Image (cartoon, rainbow, N blue to C red; front, side, top):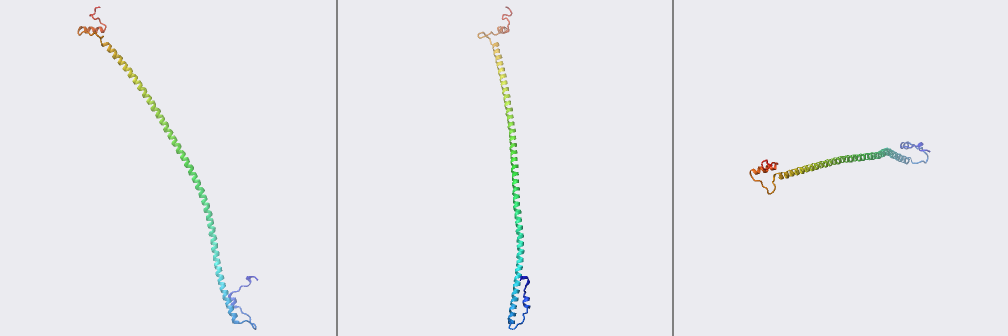
Length: 197
């Protein structure tokens, strides 16, 4: 027979009446045993209820633990996904920053190169201008020296010519007085004897 057909409680044991029989069991002993069985059934029933309560509590805790475990697993998976996504995002941002930095560095290098080229061009232009200016000053100096030499040579020639005109021949010193005027006149092409020939 299945268990559900026979359920015995302590009250059932206490109320159960045994039939009288000739030469049967001692009624007091049976009553004592029946009371002991009823007490044991009550104890077992209480113990079973406590066990069932603990089992329900344990099942509730197990259910709670499983829910927490599932939540923790979901949180862990979410955290791993978030970590992966964050790492990928950080990698993308780092790559973007690296590229931007490279582009900025290249732009700075290009700007510096252009500035250096402009300065070099300006310096070359300034050097050419100074060379042209020095060449012009050199031409002016040469022209000035040539003109000065020409002027000095002209002055020397005029000085030499003036010396030849004013100095009498060596050994002939004109006499002072009338002769002096005559010698001056002779220098101008006039006759020395007063016009007579």
